[in-house]
Length: 86
Image (cartoon, rainbow, N blue to C red; front, top):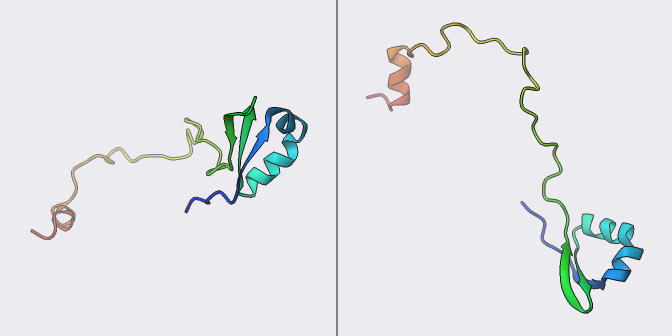
């Protein structure tokens, strides 16, 4: 379940530059912070929803082996189970 922002505070671009580390910590804790330039909202600092590493294709190459008949037709009794016992 995604976290809801706790606070939506607007800070100036200058303040964001001088206090970026603190603002990032607050965002990581669930706050939403809007960064404004010349009084106009320009960006939003929010917590990440998913911090898991992205999958890399080919990473498991050679770790699994498939039998030669892996795509052979299924036995009739197994097919019946998939089809609801017809």
